[in-house]
Amino acid sequence: MLADHDDSLERAAAVHIAAAHDLRSVALAAAATARTIASHMASCDVRHIPAPLRCVLVVDDDDAARAALVTMLRAGLPGVTVFDADSVTTAKIAVAAYRPAVVVVDYVLRVGRSSASSGLSLLYDLPRVHRGVIVSGHADLADLSAPLRAIGAEAFTRPLTSTEAAPLVAHVRALLDAAAPEAP
Image (cartoon, rainbow, N blue to C red; front, side, top):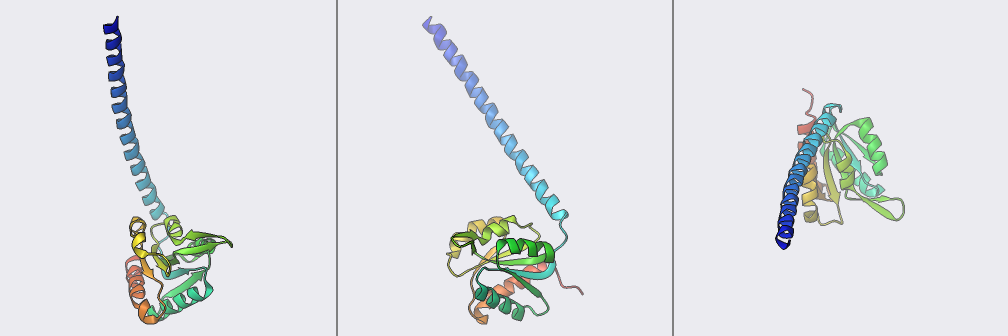
């Protein structure tokens, strides 16, 4: 009787092991399907969105910082329209209205009086036809490298002078040229 019990335990274990292998296969297949669906949705998303225009949107909740950044970008990008927004909500409306090729966003955006939102979350939510750039005077930019790579964005320390703004302006110009070349 003990031998029968051992045999049934072995059979049960074999069934559980086979089921586990099948579940792993199902899980792997489901993950592959999810990646395929996500890729398809992303390509559909981009194909149904009008091409971006050769303009820039600056998003910052600090009025003085936003005005300074807009001024630096306008000076460094003659002929390029630079819009601005003071919140994530306003930015989403501006993206829909102006279709900017590049969105430059502060890393920390206040939401109300006591909470904050990441500029990264805004960039995550935007269709990939819009190129993203994070500016920050507070965050350690090295800590942002992985999330930025995931969305194809770059980060720059908030420029305080036109000399400090030169690398940011050059990067924004390169993004504009790639996403929305100048008309001949």
